[in-house]
Length: 310
Image 1 (tube, helix red, strand yellow):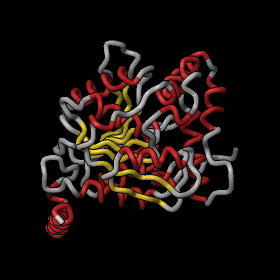
Image 2 (cartoon, rainbow, N blue to C red; image 1 turned 90 degrees about the vertical axis):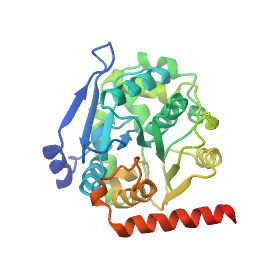
Image 3 (cartoon, helix red, strand yellow; image 1 turned 60 degrees about the horizontal axis):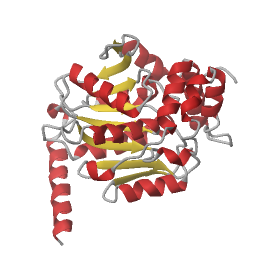
Image 4 (cartoon, rainbow, N blue to C red; image 1 turned 30 degrees about the vertical axis):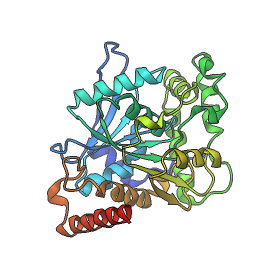
């Protein structure tokens, strides 16, 4: 593989947004890594959860753009957790540590599945205000690897990386997508054996979302029409699970649209968050919201209620 092409935006991001490391469990080896950008006065930020191969900085383009527009955004990198319940308990403790009662979650692939499971886990005392699910899934059985989930911890790192790389696009792609894939391969190389093994275990151990527990949460489903690791059946299942969800379709973007189609992704994120402007769950600094945007929001809400009554 050739030299990784690093964008000037990424270098700027690394030089301006500090990486924080936080421990919330009794086990000191479980370290959350995160970038927190935008106004700290916002108490309901948007939190990004990466895929199996990702680190917190794969969302650098969303962090730079959205924080520049006045949103508070946080991108996470998980510690090593071997089951969903353990992850959810750790994530709840992290939100407590950050003094965040409710949050919006953007989850990519595994990150989207974990976001749904966390919303389900906290449904009696809700911590999730809304969900943006990018190339995500609701049932791990779609990967047909539930029988191997308990053996990932035994596999050497090179074998685990080979499994993950098998889901990356292999055919001809445009330059932006090629750069995105190269970037993700580089991020994958930075992950250790236990990080990869634990994420693959979470991705493949037998688990599914219970929709009745999270049906009242506003959802946007973001997916691509070109080649991705997600099957058509998995996408259809998500549409069935969330019949009232907004749909954000990208014509192209592959597995990592937040890298190679960042302008479109950022726009869909803004459209999703617009419904919370002017409320206590706004992820944006009120002074950054124009009166015109609020009027548009009121008109949208009015149109939606009129349609429901019709």
